[in-house]
Every structure is written in structure tokens, then in C-alpha cells.
Image (cartoon, rainbow, N blue to C red):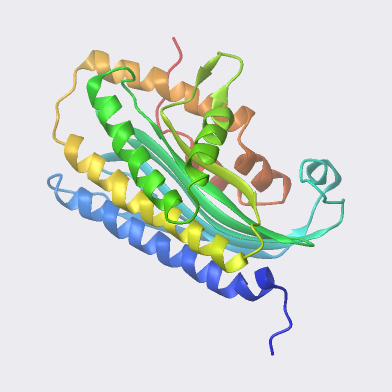
Amino acid sequence: MNSLPPHERLKPEAAAWFAALRERICAELEGVEQHAGPNPGRFLRTAWDRPGGGGGEMSVLRGQVFEKAGVNISVVEGEFTPDFAARMPGTEAGAKFWAAGISLVIHPRSPKIPAVHMNTRMIVTAKGWFGGGGDLTPLQPGTPQAAEDAAFFHAAYKAACDRHDPAYYPKFKAWCDEYFYLPHRSEPRGAGGIFYDYLDSGSAEADFAFTRDVGEAFLAAYPEIVRRRMHEGFTPDEREAQLIRRGRYVEFNLLYDRGTMFGLKTGGNTEAILMSMPPEVKWP
């Protein structure tokens, strides 16, 4: 009989799932690039080791459709520093942690295609939990196309949530709207999606199944949105507005994002953590 706690038993399977999901997402995005014309972009991968334990791999594509797409995986372990332990409920300085996950941010070249963020993760300390979600950032907010894309994106995540618990979608949507908000500008970062953290329903297997479906929902929704919009033309003014809109992304990730803070405070790879930054951005 396996006497390991449920989340401990899931460590190898969870790490393998995040890696497999990365492979599928990279293949899907490269497939989109293949249909964009000559010289399609491909992912360049860079492995890294964490001095305190574990490591990961950064995958970055710079292409015709995706100006910059980053899909990272990591499996790290170590001890919480005092300042970061204070941010984690029920965690003390020096407590050991293990964390595995996948994180992606995509900045499309066309302002007609929304930017997107998705991550899923499992963290184990004295207990274990899952977290993650996905959110969409239209670069032309307020247009009928942006509303259509947001509705399609949300429908995919609602379907994933409803398969597990009808209460998940309204709860996690509201959490996303609250989390991805720029207080200093009094505005949301984008069109939202879902966000959840510290998910420990009492069944690690059920929580892992839900987390897998969050990844599947991304694969079902975002590439389809890209294919709908990738051949639409845009003007220099629309491109200018896109670059300014990207500034909101930078502001949020550097000021408020938990994943950025977790990575930097626990000795993660700086380049992989800041992979989320857009390749070109402007402020008015």
C-alpha cells in the first residue's frame, strides 16, 4: 500500500502532464505559424537549473503570427524565504516546498488577435494544492470582434468548470476579474477568464483532473481564435494602440503578479520569469 500523502503521490504524474501539455501547445502554435507564409517561427528551447533544487525549460517562439510566444515548464524545490513565506497562507520561513507547472504568455503581432496568458501548477508544502487559470487581453477592447472572442474563450472555460463543479465558473471568473485588475488605473487588464489558487477540495485526483481540463480548455479555445483573426489586416494606428495596450500587461506583471513574485523570491530563472514581457511596448 502506498502510504504517501495524495499530493506527494501525484508529483511525477503532475510534472509529466505539464511537460506533455507544453509539447502539445508548442506544436499547435507552430502549426499556426506554418500556415502564415514563408519562414514560419519555431520554438527555441533553453533548459535551466535552479541552484536550490530542480529547474525547467523556457520555450520562446518569434514568428509571423506570434511576435513573441513563451511556453515554460518547471519543477523546483527548496525552502521559503521569510518575506515570501509571509505571503503564503499557513507557511513558515524555512518550510520546504515543491512546485511544478506550466506558464505561457502569447503576444501576437496583429492587434486583431488578443494576447493571452495561461498557467497551471501544483504546489506541495506541508499540504498540497493546485492553481492556475487563463485570461484573454483583447488589443482592441470594445469592438464586436473582441466581444466575440471573449465569449468564445469564456465558454470553453465555463464548460471545463461545469464538468467538475457548477460553482467553479462563477467563483473563478469573479476571482480572475478581481485578480487581473490594475488598481492604479482603476481598470481590468483584459477580458478576463478564470483564476483559482489553493484548490484543495479533499480529493487531489479530482483537483488534478480539473487542472488538466483547464489546460485542455486553452487548447480548444485560443488557437481557434487565432485562426479566425490571423489573416485580417490592420492599420498603423491599430498597431500603435496595441503597443500602448501592452503597457498594461507590463505594469500588472511587474507590480502585482503572484507568479512573477514566486519565481523571483524562490530563486527561479530570471529570463524565464520575465519571458512574459512583450517584445515591443509603448506608453503614451
